[in-house]
Length: 289
Ligand code: NAP
Image (cartoon, rainbow, N blue to C red; front, side):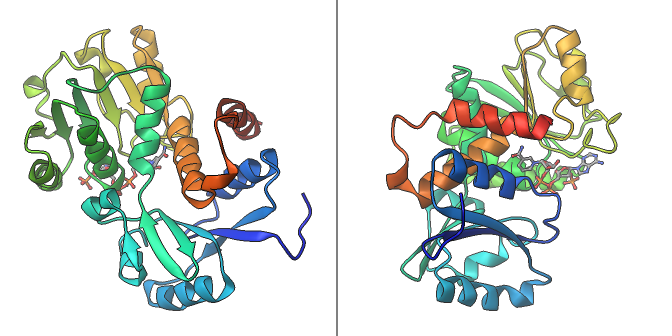
């Protein structure tokens, strides 16, 4: 689709952004839905530039923004409004510009949950192990709590960070039972879990030989979800497949969160006829090639 005077602009801000798949994913969504819009990635050198960036977004009428590392927290002070989940998390990855008023959202955890729902996996009343306690773990833990998870076991290198995440979730969802361990405390970790989620970068390209936990301590009832998307099959996923476990890779979460951003920005342009599974397949094909 060509650019003309009506082309709307969307963008990503972060640092670094050169390896981001977001421009390809969002431009594919625009193209496949015949939406006259383009998505660019802007490297913002320092947090000191954020105020000017936000002024520029308002002045130029940029319709929607994704925010990535390291500005997901810092951006909040420049927004006019923030939705409930982003407020709980204290982090924003999607911004909607409505006539110069900026509203922040966080779609990371929604993208994760959607990929489970797409596989008809029910989270309510279940027990999950989350490895890691960083930004992604926060979004996932809070989203699982919203969906009625019964029990969370958080395993992290730094136990203090795991306990901070436990406190945040328990404050808002007191019915969720949470235990925290270090990975070395393997004997303490419950083995009968429905979901094992890796949110650490262990196993990510180029260190593909890394594995955050040995999946053989769990049972074949465990679904293993590694949110890393490069490679699509991490060592954790490959070992879990050998054991006959069901697995999910991070690419689905990545594309789903982009779809959530699009639904926030362009509500009226998508409807029940929008074939997201076809669009997802086209995007995965592009990434594979
Ligand atoms: P983050 O905020 O920096 O958190 C990283 C977490 O991993 C922390 O809990 C950290 O433990 C742990 N960790 C880091 N290096 C480790 C190591 N060598 N051994 C053991 N634990 C280690 O990062 P994030 O934003 O949560 O992202 C984490 C991963 O998720 C990245 O690989 C990212 O690409 C991926 N991700 C994927 C998606 C998607 O859509 N698929 C979305 C977001 C993120 P400490 O607390 O001890 O430091």
